[in-house]
Image 1 (cartoon, rainbow, N blue to C red):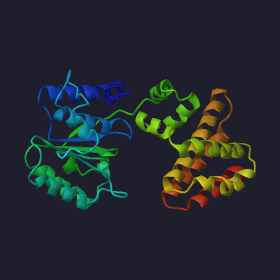
Image 2: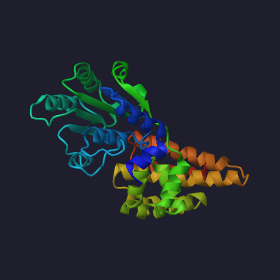
Image 3: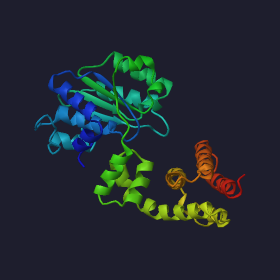
Image 4: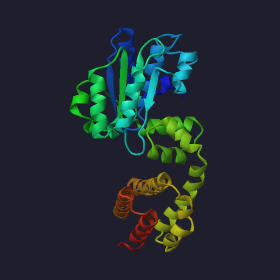
Length: 312
């Protein structure tokens, strides 16, 4: 699915509004794109940059094939900068470097664009530095700030941006799109529980770790569901072998959560009490919170298993 098709399907109002603004020359100097991860914020950011630089615009759409479009797609265009968090946050040195680069001579003619992903992770110093940049822009400049939580942005920054809200993706639509791409229903539902992004879901579906891990995690789920004591031993025997990195550990709990939520939904559909399943879902959610608080994964997984097996 092309970026245009994705935005038309999932963010029709926002996409249409942006097209009209460009057509009538009503582009703001700063936008704040707010919405859940995977709802198309970054796709629209890059589409907008391509639309403004494209050499062969067709029917109000960037061609996607000219030199300018390709350079933006590869993040190699000298007038378009994409900033991502270093570690857990956007730091003041990144904003200062951005200001320094944009103040240098030698840029290609035309607008200068900077896109800040996860802008709501900026620390206070970075936010204040960015505020000065927005208040005193040099030349023709466009700023796009992508955030999940509007409340984490300084009100003074919000007041200098045009705020664009992105609707959450429809899970059923995402599942259908994945199935149309050849992914079976079970995997499509699992992927839709892990991300709201079609492109990210396809990427995950092709990941070697994911394709091996999901079966291992499903076996852990089956042990836990049957209250089989093997579930505790299985943590050390199999789960820890696929939990080398923090992201993998988070994904393991997210996949386990999906299996239990799916079990609960099936029980409700058959008018069977889901009290036990609700409790198990709550235990896994608490495990995710502990992992986020840097409790060692093995301890989280073992305690989770014991609580489910022996009802605390």
